[in-house]
Image (cartoon, rainbow, N blue to C red; front, side):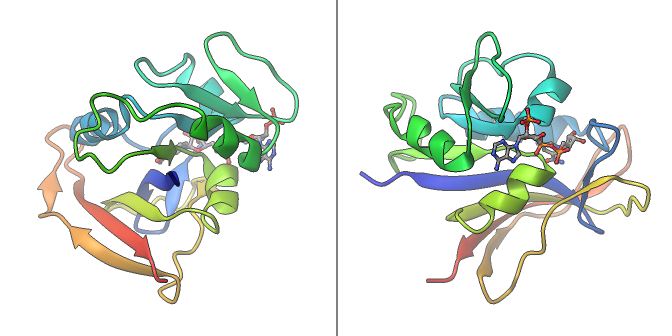
Length: 174
Ligand SMILES: NC(=O)c1ccc[n+]([C@@H]2O[C@H](COP(=O)([O-])OP(=O)(O)OC[C@H]3O[C@@H](n4cnc5c(N)ncnc54)[C@H](OP(=O)(O)O)[C@@H]3O)[C@@H](O)[C@H]2O)c1
């Protein structure tokens, strides 16, 4: 069975995703969406994102891409390709809600998204309607020749920050 590779990210209008090894916002509904979507499935992340989260994410295999380190509670991979091989060794969880079988999620950050966007099958992007000019980490360009937007939610407003955001899905054009 082939494994679907899905990038999941929250992206500002200017494609910013991080600053000072931290996220740019705290949007509770987006964090809930992330948890609900990825729980049970392998998550692949760069070493800096793992350090920024500060602990392995519970209830899902954590695969850290690093050329150097070893981390408690997480498996390490020396390349993204190795991370995909490792992810493929995990069975689909019994909670596989939509019965679509094997998937893994690429959860950041900037370096890993840049490398993975050429290999991913789907993007799940939360578009947050804010511009962060002084961010230091950005999502790569989403080429319309390669990617087709297939879903977009209504616009929600985060009650704490006031930021407006939408959940979107993109599929690779075949
Ligand atoms: N908005 C979002 O959805 C979102 C999601 C995730 C993260 N972020 C943000 O993104 C930022 C972190 O991103 P980042 O680009 O600085 O770092 P990153 O992609 O999380 O991690 C970079 C590290 O991954 C390893 N790595 C990268 N490419 C590799 C390769 N080809 N082979 C082996 N190892 C490789 C290296 O680790 P070693 O140095 O150990 O070798 C590298 O230093 C933070 O601000 C974080 O908050 C945002």
